[in-house]
Structure formats: structure tokens, C-alpha cells
Image (tube, rainbow, N blue to C red):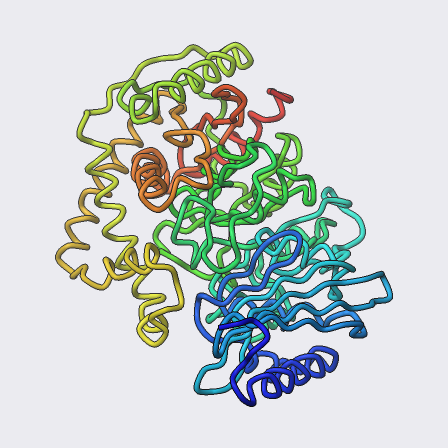
Length: 522
């Protein structure tokens, strides 16, 4: 159909809808704006930095930004694609300069609605213009979003808070726009966050997370993939993805996140950061959205060890655990090393040698049965899946399209787990805990944080799942045994960072953090 020949009445209806959109935009009429965007996960809204995917995420973004900047239409161009479809390009004037908006409008049974839009030119209004500039990393930012006590050991440090942790006056979104849309405002800060604020740290903003924290790659279908400043073009790791990306980029000094199956240690490895997963239960988890309560732990990411150590002691509070002192050796398992790619294993071996030299501790080999990692990983995943479904299954049954297919499949696996399967898995976990207790009485166990460096963003679902499966055999040991784990970003595969992970006995968090004081920068 020629571009200048719409069907009878179509152009009038389109321009009427476009006028409604402009009035709603200037009035910040969220209900009208939502009605004028096509529903579903295919709707797009992009600017010069990134694309928002899905009507729910676009709506959540609008609700958080606080309105669009004032603008005036200069010219409007309509180009017809075919009956019921047209491009509308609007040239605008703003206080900050000229702007340009391109929209694809489609007419369905409800009338004309936007299926895709791209906006450029001028700043975006909101709590902080940079929040909208990088929505893949930040859900909400401020200057600061929440001010700390004004003095204390963490004064001047900026914290990127994972969007599982309660921030008073804000909603917890969990990386899922449909959840965010119905979440209540939090009445108080999570106790872990309150400890950081009381020590003088400021909240820079609320950082994005993988959907319900049930992923390790740092990819979110709704908000996008945060930029990994330490490995451009590659994923940041997750699920504490936004926190890690912000710290790696220097827009935050600390990442407050969670680790169930490696969600601090994996992004620490991929982004070249120090990562600490505390002893299970050592840091309060109240006010934090759960995934699997048997394994969830609240911890930290930082660019340098000294900052991590200071903040770690603040999080531990008045009860730092049971000191065990300096270990007698650094322990190495060939079985665990071989779970990583050859290049990663070599890089981690070099990091272990450097750690041995820095501490003066010998490296001692320990035996891990070849079939043990697969066995303990299967047991972990059984209990994790059952608990994840217990927490989020009812919501996902009511909102079946709320999460991406790969994440939905993990939750559905939990629906099928019965009580005998959980009981059998718990027996394996108890056996693994007893075995690791004996091992850690001999020294601290050192292993790769991940099976590979950060994957390319284009690796796709199959590539991500293969990397996730390999890494889980390394990360789930600390998770199911409840021991503290410290990720050191000392390995290099070419220019890509990889982490060396050190496991200590339960309750030895202060001793593990003290290691950072002696090491200095790597």
C-alpha cells in the first residue's frame, strides 16, 4: 500500500491517539500512558543508552522516573507501513535542547497503541537523570537516594542495593516488573542495610537483579543486561548483577547483595571484584526477598579488599562469629580445579600461588571424590528448587508470563519436587557438610569462583545454561555447607578477570576478612 494512502479515517484516529499520548506525557498520567502502549513482552521503549523490553517494565520505569521533561511539538511526520500500522516521528523542543521521538503505532481491537518507541535528545527527568540513562544497572538512583548517618567507618561510601533488599519508602521489585507493580512500599530498611547506613554509608540507588535472583549470568529479559566495565561486551554475572556492574563502573563503592548459589561470587569473578558470602545467618536476612532460605546469605562486593573488610565488619555487627585464627595451609583439590575450563584453572592456580606467597602458607592437596561435586550439586538444586517454588510459585501461577522462559523452567522444576526427594537431598547435604568440616579443620579450601570468565552477551540461553551448570558445581559447596566464602579477583584469562574463592570454617568470617588486611591490593 502506498505510504501516503491510509485507510479511510485511519489518519484522524492515529493523530487523535498521538495527541492523547502527548497530553498524558506532559501530565504524567500513568494510566493513560499505559493504556496507549501495547501490552505484552514484545513492546519496546529505547533511548540512547538501552532498551526496555515489555510493557510492564516500561510502566515501572515511568512510575519511578517522576515525569518527563517539558517539551513542545515542532513537527510531526507520519509514514504509513500498511493498514493499521504507521511510524510517527515527532520533532520537539525542550529546555535542554531539541529532541526526536520515533514511534511505531499499531491499530488493534482496542484502538491505536504504541508497539515500539525510541527517544533521543535532552535529559530525562526523575530522581536522578543517570537512573534513566542506565536502567539495566539501576532501577532507581538518587544523590543520594538515602543519606547515611553522616559519620562513621563507612562515611562517604556509596552503596548499590540489590533490588531484593528493603529500602524504606521504596518497593522491592525482585527484577520482575509484574511483582514491582503490586509490591507495597517498605516501612523500614532491612537490618543489614541499616547497619551500613548507621556506619555512614549512603545509598546510591536500587540496583537491578536477575529475575527473582534465580540466575547466575546477569541477564534480565525486562531490564536488559548491565554493562560489565571490566569485561566489555560480556555479561556481568548475577544475580547481584546491577550491584556488581555499578561497583565495577565506579558509580558505587559497595554492592549490597545476596548469594544463594553464587550470586555474589559469580559477578565478583566476572567483573573483577572482591566478593564476600558470609556464614549462613551471620548477617540478618530480615527485609530481604528470599529465594531458598536454607542457603540465602546477605553479603558484599567491592573494588578493593580494604573497603570490603571495613564494610564486612560493619555487617557482622556486635557478634563477629567464632575466631579460628590463621589456617595452617591453603588447600587445593584437583577435582575442583578440573571443573573449570583449562584456561580458568591455570589462572586460578597462578592466583593461588600468589596468595601462598603473600600469606606464607603452604599449598596442600586434598582429595575430593570425582563424583562428589555432581552429587552435592544435585542435592542443592533439589532443595533450592523446592524452596524457590514455595516462595514464588503462587505468584507465578497467577502471572505465568512474569518471568522469562528459562527462569520459569527453574521454578517449575521446584513444583515437581516432593517431600521424599527433599529428605533424600538433605541427607546428601548433611553428609557433605560433615565432610567439609573435616577438610576445613586442615586449612582453608581454595577453588575457582566460576568455571569460565564472563561469557559474551551473545552466548544465548544454551551457552548461559552450560556455564551456569559448570559453575554451580563449584559454588554450591559453600552454599549448602553454610561456610563463609571470599572471592579474590586475582586471576586473568587474557584480559578477562576470574576469581579465586577461599572457604573457611563456619563462623570464621572475621578471620577470613582479616586476610584482606594482610594482602593489600593484588
